[in-house]
Image 1 (tube, helix red, strand yellow):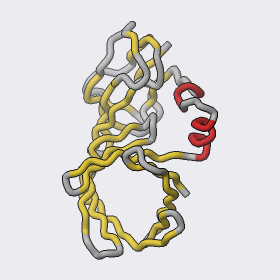
Image 2 (image 1 turned 45 degrees about the vertical axis):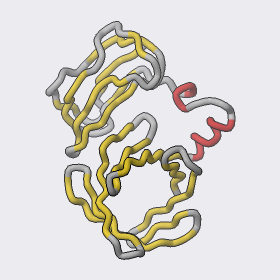
Image 3 (image 1 turned 90 degrees about the vertical axis):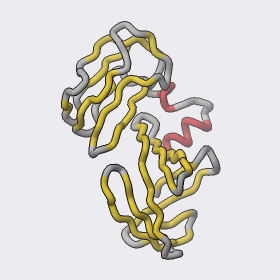
Amino acid sequence: MVQVRVNGGRSCKVNPAPGHFQLDGNQLPWSVETLGEGRFSVITDSAKSRTVQVVFRDHENDSLDLVIRGKTYQVVLENPLDEIIRTMGLSRSAIAKPMEIRAPMPGLVLKVLVTPDQELNAGDPVLVLEAMKMENLFKSPGAGRVKQIRVQEGMPVEKGAVMIVLE
């Protein structure tokens, strides 16, 4: 079961399963076909096909920007820990301040958007990684300074590779 929040609205529980998914306890039929380059065809219970384009993925905040019929939706995936942290009046970045930005999957560094010793605020863009034909923007998890840049534009990286070190 995954908590999902769309465009900052109310949170709902989604349980995806082959052939159907549950939305707040209601079971709905669906199917998905990959079209390539971050595009998917989604068919719902109304038997209408919708093309969904993933235009942005933010790994640090577990969010996606999707375009459906010309309209952009921000989808945030939440887990139970996120809810506990939020009820305490904190944020995930305040709890865990990773000092390293690592590649979550193999990919190719398209752009490095920072320089050594650059001061960053939480959410500042750091680099763009292309993986599975999608561009993934990595942002600073918190305020700090760029201590080390271990990648260059055009450089391939493996899963788990340290790309940026912050202090």
